[in-house]
Amino acid sequence: MRPSYDGSMKTTTQIKLEIDTAAAPVSETMEALVMPVRARTINYTAPVSRAQNDKVLREMNRLLDESPEEEIGLFVTSPGGPTGTAMSFYDMVRHVLKARVTTIGSGDVDSSGVIIFLTGETRFISARTSLLFHPAGRIFGNQRYTTQEMEAMLREDRLKDEQYASVVAGNSKGHLTTNDVLRLMRTHSVLSPTELMAYGLADAILP
Image (cartoon, rainbow, N blue to C red; front, top):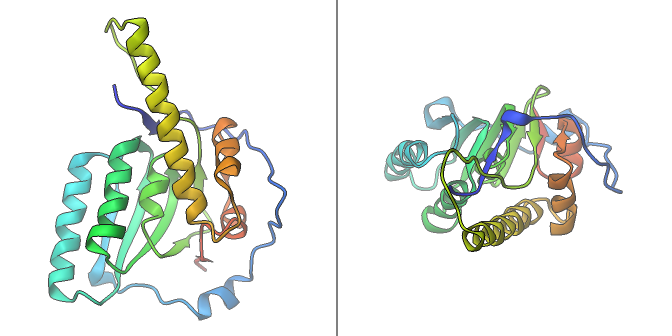
């Protein structure tokens, strides 16, 4: 089983980091930002999976072929899924396609779904959006594993946690460190729109 971030066990337990959580007024923030047009907005409204990645990336490539410099919108609602699958999507959009993407997070954007949301260089949320952070975990059925295999899984999960926290911190405009994000993950923190603005993870709250 691969390490996964799945928001199905969402709780409201969270910690408060020692930063200012006073978000900028919505009207002032929105003035400098432009929403992508509807015809160039793609939906990522599903668990994170290779199939969903392929579907969205095919549409994104089509829009890039039509107009490579024009903004692409990505509407994100997701309970999460395999961590590496989300990282692969992030790397493809940010570092291979180098598309100009604006993401709109709505409702539950949880676990590895956060990485999908963070692919946007500009990021909108609604007043009803929340983001869940928690450590990687695995689901076991009747499969038998040796001690060595379990230790390897634990090492991989810890590496994935570090990578996840690093991506989140790197998209916080300097407000969060990797250790800050790891603390949020350990306490299964759910962040509100105001906190997302203050932590630099969102650029504006939609009116």
